[in-house]
Length: 229
Ligand SMILES: Nc1ncnc2c1ncn2[C@@H]1O[C@H](COP(=O)(O)OP(=O)(O)OP(=O)(O)O)[C@@H](O)[C@H]1O
Image 1 (cartoon, helix red, strand yellow):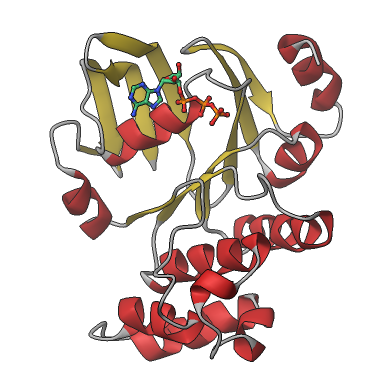
Image 2 (image 1 turned 30 degrees about the vertical axis):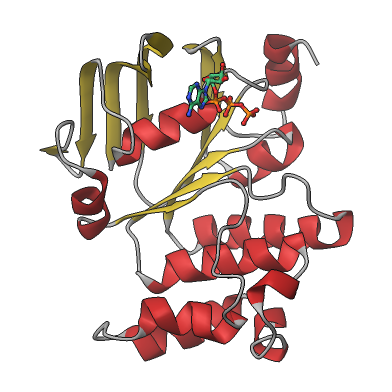
């Protein structure tokens, strides 16, 4: 689905990723774990093409997309939910969703499916996005991305800074998306959740992948040792 080969990337002269190689299989969640500043968000941005690759390659569904700009990767089926649950705060939740759905051939059906996944958004549809809680905004952001019917969802710390009651709901949804066969590259700090959701995981430290394996309960201890947490 997505293959990253020996990728270096960064900002200006500062290199953040030092030769990262990663395989994201189709129809499953792959988790990237790591400490703050390890380069996890940078990896997602480079996979999408928001920042360029210094060297190395990015393949998406057997196509070399290394030099393609982000919007062309989106057209090929990638969707990205960055940290911070961005939406248009002055528009209602439903308007935010319609903005994506309108003009798409199957937009209406995709919008309904997204609302089925996050029933809370139905009752909040008329509320301005800026007045939603962080957790509700995160659900809105994921719903918006899903309306594009992506083949690969890049999800950056969906539970960060969100009240515990909603965290469980978002975690359930991510697990469900994986079970439904969506390919997800999930950046996450909650080791337990990431390993429950993911078929494969890797640990990123200072821009390098230092361990990887199969997401299973037994892996938690190994990952915690790798992360020294
Ligand atoms: N836009 C930017 N310009 C310059 N440096 C940046 C930029 N974004 C991130 N960095 C730097 O790149 C490094 C990796 O940041 P990144 O956000 O990828 O880490 P992360 O693993 O996602 O961390 P976190 O878990 O805190 O989000 C950090 O040293 C950070 O300061």
